[in-house]
Length: 121
Length: 109
Image 1 (cartoon, rainbow over the protein chains, first blue to last red):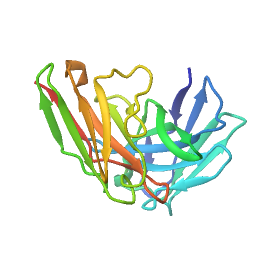
Image 2: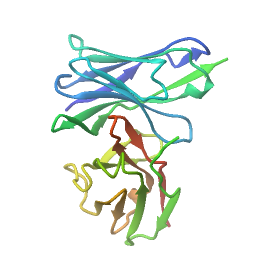
Image 3: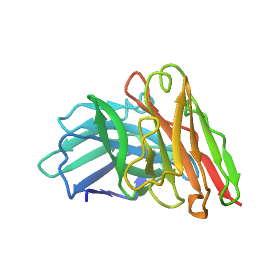
Image 4: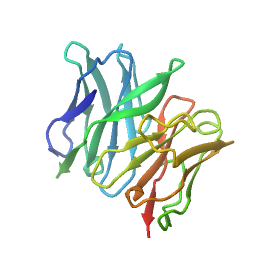
C-alpha cells in the first residue's frame, strides 16, 4: 500500500530555511494533490500548502511569502522549503496525500508519520 | 488561527453516544464538503469521514458525519475506549485553502 515518509533536519537555526522531503512509496505520485501540514506541540493542525502532481502549488495565505512546495515525479518525492524560520515554526511536520473529487481537492487520505522540527535560537 | 470552531472537549462512558460540533462560515463549510480526522496522541491523523458523511473502508459505522448550513457534526455511537483521541473537522474554503478545526479531545470515562 502507499506509504509516505518525511525526511530532513530535526533542528534548524532561527532565520534559516527549513527543508523537508516526502518520499512516496508503493504507488505513483501522479493524479493526486500532495500537502504539507504541521502541528505545533500541544496545538492543532495547520495546512501549509499543496502541490498537484503536475506542478501547480497553492499555499496558506499566512505562510505564502515564506513557503515553496515542489514535486519531483522522477523520484516520487515532493518537498517543502520554509524560509526565515522562527520559534513559532517549531512543530511536527506531516506530508499527506490529497485525493481529488470533480477536479477539486478532497480528503487527506494517507499521512506520513510526521517529523519533529525544532527551531533554535 | 483556525476559523472552524469545535468544543475543546467531549466525554462519555462506554456505549454512550458522543457528538462533536464544527462551526464555520458560508465560504468554507457552507459551500464545501466537511472532513473529519481522528488523531491518537503521538500518531498521525487518520481520515474518519469524507465529503460530509462518507466513511473510508475500515472505519466502523459507529462513526457518522452530517452537515447543515455552516455547521457540521461528528457522532460516535457505542463509545469504546479506543475512541479516546483528538478529533478535527476540516473543510476547503473558496480559495482552495484547507482549514482545520480547533480540535476536540474525546475522553472515555
